[in-house]
Image (cartoon, rainbow, N blue to C red; front, side, top):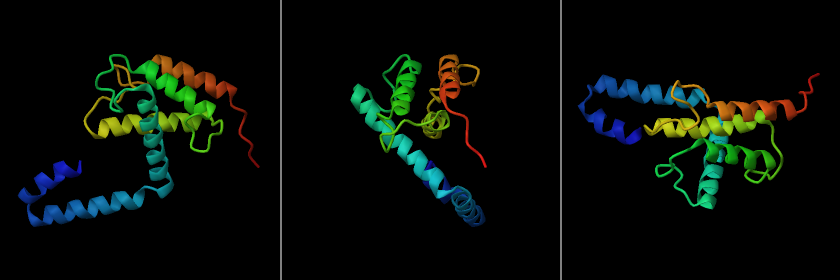
Length: 141
């Protein structure tokens, strides 16, 4: 995105360039640092996982993406790819998958977790539903 804007900005009127910079600052202030850190962590873990599999992290040469995402989700759940090595809950796994999909989308690639209708793939939905049933109920005061 930055490279695209670098080529476009010189052709925009000065006011538009200023508006773009302000909008970027607004966006950066609107996103929490913990959210950004979670996304970085998810991508770092995805990078390790794809290296372990021996495939490119962008999955360009892979025909079927869903089984790779399912195994990734399973390994994150088991703690093998979790940052602290602990068993994690379904919502965190879902966030990992979302982060990876959004990174793919941001660079113009297809969000690998979505089917042709733009919904989460059936197999991933079923896996996440099973994980939801296994998770203990939240403890609230």
